Amino acid sequence: MSRRCWVSVIMIFFAGPAAGQPPAPKEFEVASVRPNRLNDRIVTIDVGPGGRFAARGYTLKLLIQRAYGVMGWNISGGPSWLDEERYDVSAKAAVVGDLKEQQLMPMLQALLSDRFQLRVHRETREISGYALIIARGGPKFKPGADRDQDNFRLTETGVKARGITMANFARFVGGKLGLSMVDLTGLPGTYDIEADWVADTDSPAGGLPADPREALRSAVFTALPSKLGLKINAQKIAAPILVIDRAQRASEN
Image (tube, rainbow, N blue to C red):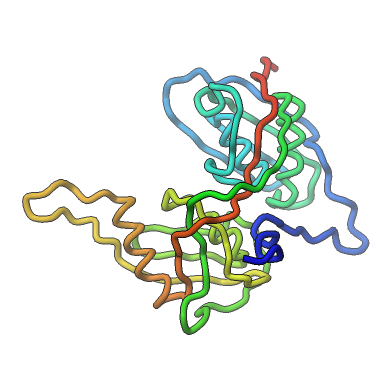
């Protein structure tokens, strides 16, 4: 594969502010980070109007995933408690209207750097994984207006996304299926994607219950070529890895 293709896998571009608009803030106006010692297993996140961000029961690893736009498999290193100890985060940003993902990410990165002393660097490693590629006959979906990257839903009955890049589509589908997956379609821009399918979760007669994730994987692998003109191919991939150089527990506010 050419160097140009490898680079396209790991680079993400963000549009700058429109003319006449003030630059987006780099940090939250106010922020609270508190350890969550409840044994309730409740994990929620809310990115709302008025620049509000709230996460409940989030581990540092989950916060890193949100701040840097990566999945768990993209993260390497870190302390033993990275994926165990939970935190509640409440913050507010000086933005007009809804807090968008492109605004949230640098502010959350700054918060983690300040409160957790998080230091990271990026590497590219060749690993066994999966690539999203174009199937025979070409793609079967249309360009869409750019929207927030949370506009994605994949279930046992289908997938729906609005204004999503192929890089994010591959990342989100891979995350839902538990696969290390990158985009190698070469398709630029954003797209509206929708397809229906049926994942067979019924138990065989007298057998054990079907594994829901395996059933979903089977449905997605089968449906993508015919429904969307895309294919998931098992192969070696150039994986963008976020390496944690330093992290410490956040102190009480």
